[in-house]
Length: 127
Image 1 (spheres, one colour):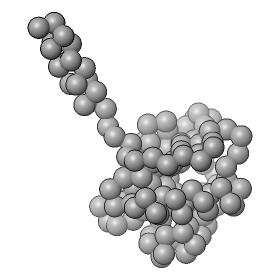
Image 2 (cartoon, one colour; image 1 turned 135 degrees about the horizontal axis):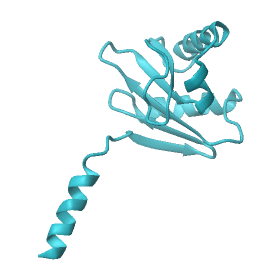
Image 3 (cartoon, rainbow, N blue to C red; image 1 turned 120 degrees about the vertical axis):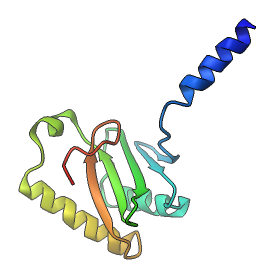
Image 4 (cartoon, rainbow, N blue to C red; image 1 turned 60 degrees about the horizontal axis):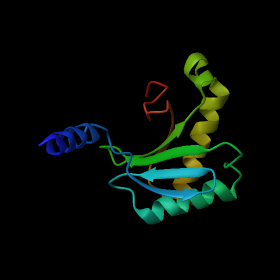
C-alpha cells in the first residue's frame, strides 16, 4: 500500500511540470520543438545555428514553438544580465534582422520572431 501511495504522489508531481517538447542535441546546443514544428525544421534550425557561428563554448538551450497566429517563436534563454538591463535598440534591431534571415533561409517564409527568455522560456521583453 505504501508503494502504491508513493507511486501515485510521484506521478502526480511529475505531471505538474510543463513539457518543453521533443529535443535534438548537438554538442553545446539543445533545441526543443513543440507541436506545429517538425523534427526536420528543428534539425534545419540547429544546422543553421551551428554553421553560422551561433554555437559557442557555453551550453545553449532554445525552444521552437508556433503560436496561435502561426508565427514561429525562437525562444532563446539569455543571461541574467539581460533580465536586469533589457535590450538596447541595436540589440532589438539585430534580433529583427535575425528573425527575417531565419524566415528566408530556414523556415520557408514562415513568420519568425526571436524571443529572449529567462530559463523557463518566459519572454524577457514585452511583445
